[in-house]
Image (cartoon, rainbow, N blue to C red; front, top):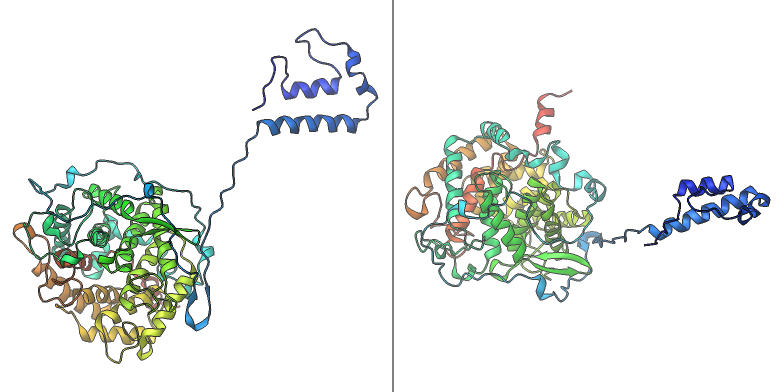
Length: 524
């Protein structure tokens, strides 16, 4: 910084001195002949000298802010093959930036059950290490509304407003919830909170946390899938309107979010920062998709700035992991292409990020639509796993239809209407809660008598089958399940997560077709 002597004059006085051809008497003035040349100099020369002097002074004391350049991924569609994305490669990660995961290899010795009041007591934004990243206005970055995520184009209010106390009561009445279903949700959240490990995470081997007070853990090989287990445990809290800012379980949610962010692997893909939450024990992108949904919903609900960068980086990882056919599989860019089950979780994560006004490239959305085109049959009413199916595959069809809804299909789309009829014909599956989870969302968004019938049966069955005693009180387990909640997969923790989210279906998301229903009811 330039120094100024004691005899230097303020800028205004310098101007007056030059124009008046004299210096105010702070010291003995110099002879007037020192400025005599100004009498004969032209006015333009005096003005020029003065402005040059001012510019030089300002230049010495001004500091310019460095420009920050942010790399934003761009992808381009290349016809029927799906979006073309540059090859995926994780650069070497600085070990100092990574947090070692606490392994659940031995039972955690607890003298008493974990109490939610003993977790972190912080009422300030989460302290998560972040790096600068500029967020652009999503409206200018998305593809046309008909080809993007349906949520914001059809609902004028914030989508997560449905989880506020007043709106929850309203939607519960309108869509078939009950006092008994809400009581079941509360008991389920208590069970989940009591099975949170001291490090903030969860494990599908939940008996390690409660010292065997309740049984039916998941497959031992899933014990290391702590990101997936933590995400599945957190989703019901967020669905009930609990955040790390507010709610009875805010400290539980805070500890879980901190665990996920710390447990992610930082890296770059062609200069784009990513947060990788995949894990082999959780079938790779299954774990990542679930964790990305959690981060996106938490950010959309709270707008906590500490979550903005890790959430965007988790979404970036989904973008870079997209397969050539537009889908997603266990590993990024898998040559065999995507499968409908993994795709469902990634689309839900992108939709949740869209709710939070994060960056979701339109090419990624268009690519997912191309994948669904690839695996659909019967005009979009049925969906296979990696190829079209000649018979109805319940879980794949329900997941595919829900993705179509979020990707812009109109309520009256023929494929959606035929698909809804197929789900109604299948009805509630007590051996497949994974299918029930997706089917409940599809039918709830469509509404009508079909939903009323389906909901009554599913709601009452879940309320009646919830455990009411011992260490398992508030949880669910389906011994005959043949999917992700069975004894060979996520066990009691996964079953409880799915059942709770089903009982939150009335208010977890705003109804997609609410405005359209109003228009149909009151035609011009």
